[in-house]
Image 1 (cartoon, rainbow, N blue to C red):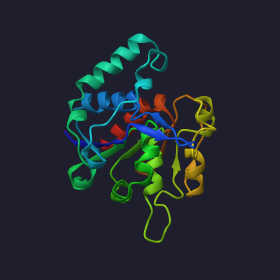
Image 2 (image 1 turned 90 degrees about the vertical axis):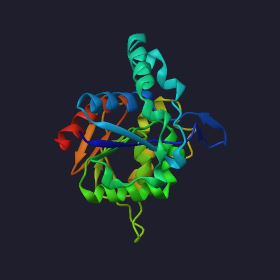
Image 3 (image 1 turned 180 degrees about the vertical axis):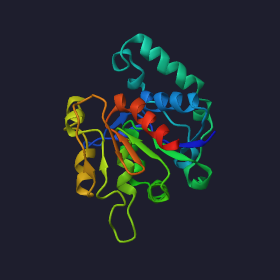
Image 4 (image 1 turned 135 degrees about the horizontal axis):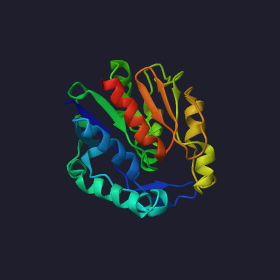
Length: 231
C-alpha cells in the first residue's frame, strides 16, 4: 500500500473581477472519485492544505444536476462523509515529498484563489515533477502550476501538454466575463501546452509523469491513469 498526497485548496471563496467573493472551495467529484479509486486499490490518502485548514466543499458541486442525478449526488456525498482525512489535513508547509508515492491536486475554483500563488505548493510541484513520481492535477487545480516558477523565472511545466478547465467551459459555467483571469489563458502564457477537448466531456492528458484532466468528468479516468503509473 502506497501513500498518496491530496493537495487541496484552503479557501472558501474566489475573488471575482469586480471584487465580490464567490463561495467555492474544492469540487466534490474531483476529490471523491479519485479517493474511491485509490482506496479501492489499497492505497492510503493524506490531505494537505495551506496552513492545515479543513478544506471547504463547493456546495454547488453537491447538487444532483452536476452529479448525473440524485443517486450520483448521494454517492458523492457519502464518499465525502467517509473521507475522514478531510477533517484532519496536515499543513502543506510540513509535507515531506519522500513520504508519498504520488501527488494529486483536485480542483474547484478554490485553487484559482490560493494555490495559484502559493510558493510552497509551487515548490512541491517542481519537486514532484522532477522526482518522476506520478503527479495528477484536474480541472481548475492546474492553476497551481502557475506558482511552479523556477529560479530563472520560467515555469517548470512549460512545454508540457496538459488538460485543464477551458475558456469555453468557464464561459458556459457563467464565469467567463466575471473572472479576473482565465486558467487556459494563464497556462498558455506560462508556456504550458493546453490540450482542449469537448466541453464537459472526459479528457485526460498524460505527459511523462504528469497526468491532467480537463473537468470534473475527467477525475475518475485520471485516477485510473495515475494508478497505472503507480503499478
